Each structure stands twice: as C-alpha cells, then as structure tokens.
Image 1: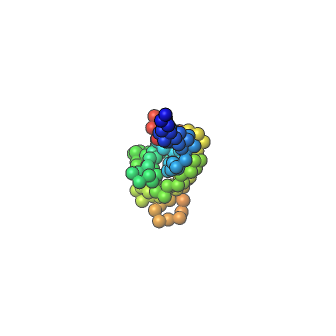
Image 2: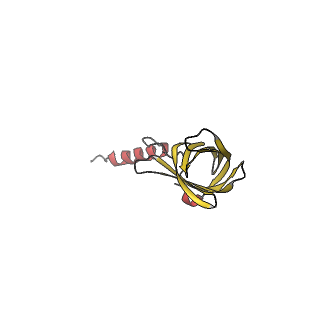
Image 3: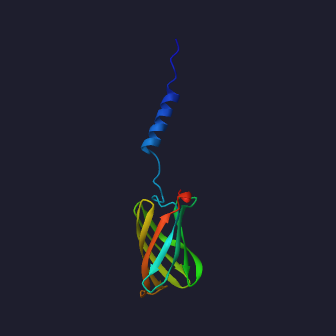
Length: 142
C-alpha cells in the first residue's frame, strides 16, 4: 500500500493561511490612500478651487503623490514632496510658481479633509491658509 503524498496539500494550506493572516506580506506603502481623490479647497483669503490628489507606488514600492489644483484661473500640477501617509493621516508639501504649500489632513473611510499653509518659497511668512476636502474616486482605488 502506498502512502499519500501530503506535501502538496500542506503547501496549499500554508499559502491559504499566509494570505488570510497576511503572514509574510509587506505593509501597504500607501496606507490605504491609493487611487484618486477629488474635491475642493477654500482659502481664508477667498481663494477656492478644485483639488485632485493621486497616490500610487513607484516600482520600488515607495509612495508617490501628485496634486492637481486650480490656482489663478489655471489648472496646476505638483508632486507631493516629503509625503507621509498613515491609515488615517496625510502630511506633505508641494512647490509651484515660487510658492510652497504644506498639507496636513486626516482620512476616515473614503473621505479626507485637512488644512494647508501657503508661503513664498524660502519664507516663513504665511500668505494664505485654508481647508480642503476630498473623496476617493472608487474607480481608481489601488
């Protein structure tokens, strides 16, 4: 009588357990922020406009973010620098047209909101500040 080979069965059980328990998997570099988020910003100086935040991972797995926003009647785009993501928060800065912006915010499920500070690049004086709100576009979730 031959004994059954249990190796394939054990391998399948181990793979299933690892995937269910997430054993051996790497943490999400985007901390759940992956995809496109759309909304708007409102500044205390009266500036307002649309805001789109995009998050994805580069080929090495590092998080990358890009902001698209209305400013001075034109749509602008800037990479999010010093991007720090956690499952419930975001911190980043961006630079465009000699200006520097610091973003901070929090996320709850598929919506996020936060504040920003706008300065001239290289200056500590705040030109404007305000709030932003975005919601995840469900078709782009990573």
